[in-house]
Length: 239
Image 1 (cartoon, rainbow, N blue to C red):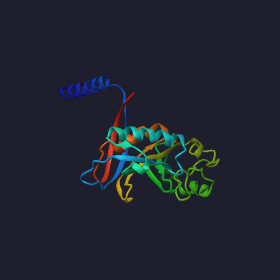
Image 2: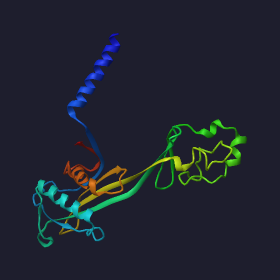
Image 3: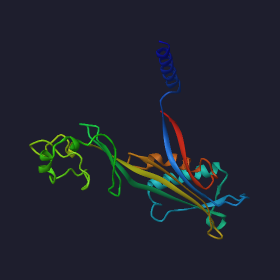
Image 4: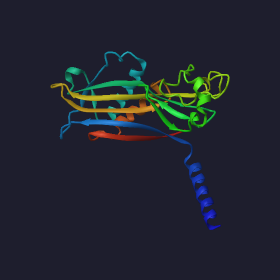
């Protein structure tokens, strides 16, 4: 009884804390930094160099405004290139990431990487439970588009064939993820030497990057100047 009472009390405390803090989500990003800034860093005049291919895109312009605002908060002053000591460059990154495939008819779940590698992440493999005599006729039956050539755990045990079976690909839940990021570099105008470079990346199931640009800029420069290496940043968002 005492153990049960303690558990009920713990659950109550968690629920109360959740109610007080409200609904919140977390934005996570991976940070990669190269810091070669000099020990004395006083002149922070800079010019923003527009990316030759991305510069006219609306998303890039939004990110540029966010970057300028953040640099101003850090004490940087924007000026013309011929008057600036530093050149700041910005590049947006948005590439397809992993695809998560799961079956509503079982616990089968796996990830398909952009290179085509299949990584099982849980569940059973039905072919282990079906006799070879049943499985063999469908060994080379046309697979779903989501099943790679060398990985097909869901061969149909049904007499009418795999295409009409409940495990066929049309019934699979497919979630495509995308790796979004920003890369910010600071170089010395006079010598072209790289002084600081930071890349912030996040994985989302949204193909558009625009909604995450402000958070990526904030994550990249949150610990400026950060030490060389990799780190993680989490930003708590109130809903």
